[in-house]
Length: 148
Image (cartoon, rainbow, N blue to C red; front, side, top):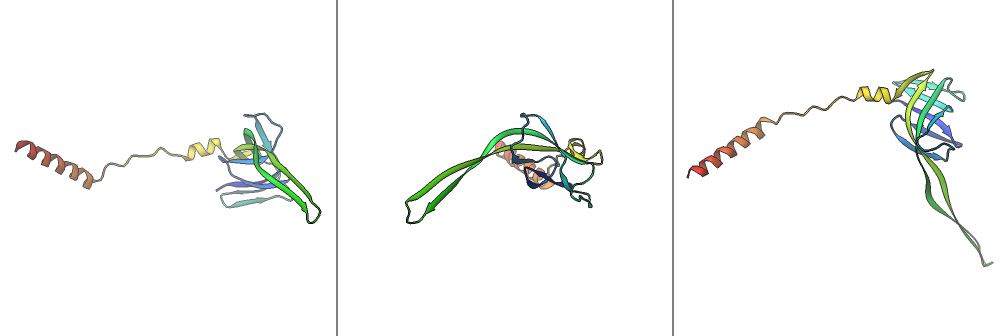
């Protein structure tokens, strides 16, 4: 499994190619491409690349799926015995990113091209013999009923 730890919006996030994540709002249009270059850590097939603080030449490519707003958070302040109450709500502006590829040293180590090659077409298994013999037995009994 290949993953990277990136920094965006002052937060660190563990990302994998082919998944989507909600991050703080980015100033990019929907269906736009984003290259995140603040990569702190990359793990690929047991090999670890640890940055101090950033991994040299590592980038994460992503596509903006949509812009949305997070859940509403209620902030309620009250001073006891003073009849002072203040209620506020807040919804965080978010951007949903689909991670397309993780690059290390200018080379794509995992992304759309590599994940498509890994998937193989599914084979359909032939019916087991017990199921086929049961169908034949059922057909024979139907034929005997028709004769009588």
